[in-house]
Amino acid sequence: MATVLKHPEAKTLPVPNGDFYKIESNLSAEELAILTKVRSFVETRVSPIINKYWVEDAFPFELIAPLKELDIGHLGIGRSGRPLLVGLIAQEFMRVDPSFATFYGVHTGLAMGSIALLGSEQQKQKWLPPMEQFEQIGCFGLTEPLVRSGTGGGLLTTAKRDGDEWILNGEKKWIGNATWCDISIIWARSLDDNQVKGFIVENKTPGFSVEKIENKMALKVVQNGHITMENCRVPEANRLQKANSFRETALVLRETRSGVGWAATGIQKGAFELAVKYAQERLQFGKPIGSFQMVQDLIARMLGNLTASQSMMLRLAEIEEAGELTDQQASLAKAFTTQRMRETVAWARELHGANGILVDSNIGRLFADAEAIYSYEGTFQMQNLIVAKAATGLSAFV
Image 1 (cartoon, one colour):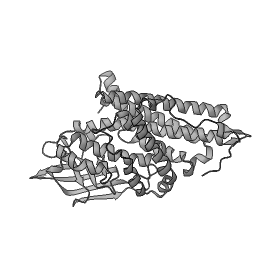
Image 2 (cartoon, rainbow, N blue to C red; image 1 turned 90 degrees about the vertical axis):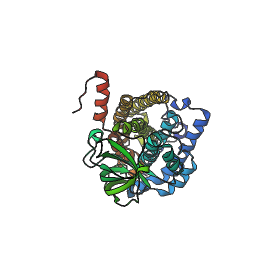
Image 3 (cartoon, rainbow, N blue to C red; image 1 turned 90 degrees about the horizontal axis):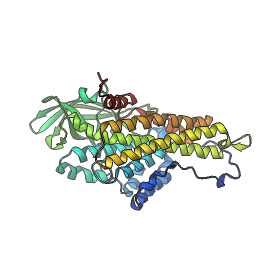
Image 4 (tube, rainbow, N blue to C red; image 1 turned 45 degrees about the horizontal axis):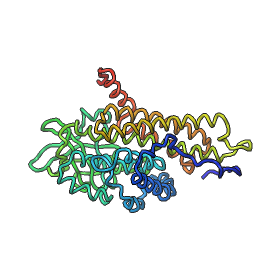
């Protein structure tokens, strides 16, 4: 890590704290204990090794066993755990490493959430228990090489019913966990009724292949895959029984889109706390740079963005817990927090100066990873169109 000169009184300064409005005080004692356990895991197990894996574009499989010991796999969409606790867990993972957090979110949110919300009771009983224990890992195959924002009406991957089986043909791209996971939730357009349907595809199924996407500049620890399906046969028993149109797919995305809001907030929290610590320790002209007015201005701006995002996400969690969350509300949160995230990590990297481009400083990794969070699960512009349509009653979609 870059050398930072510490001034003699550094130990008397406050510990960087990104919970300025005490959002975590809304948790019960039991929930706070769970969050504290997660915080210890990311700080003692993830943080010391993650830069090495990020540079090597590799996944830290050694973390799966200790992750299992946290016993949090059952918390999430359609299962258990208050939305606020689930969101704060996501924030905690993101604060330290967005890549490992994305692996966790894809598995417990998108993959398990699809089964929990749209699967039959038999499917839930078969797949969810081993997934909760991280004994089987899942991914979520919606995005395609030629279809991204337009997935609602233009999926090119097709499904054709053939007796008790479905034949899948097509491609999926940018699918996190795809290169090594056990099952993929694949969304395809039925040739029989032209509706989007979901399938649980075991990755060893003949006709199903995955190629790792190389040379990424963000979320390098996440192993993204390009999936190809050529006459891939999936039993009817593996079709998500409650997923019969894109409206059902959107139910999953609504829940996970709010999760991206927490992700963007978590990156801001990590960037802010790194910036404060650096400003307290880094000396220039015989003083810590945190005592300079322009640096303090940046810190205050970062904290404002972070606290505004946390406050929005707290209210969103309350709405979600009441069962009243709408697509438009989730989209506004995703758009707002990711835009604020971009500003916050840029200011934090600026504050670090040249040291900010070193992976060892951690902020450079957060800065790069934020670009992926800004785009995935629907771009900023697409979210704004969803929100503005609700506000005006007029559609700008073409």
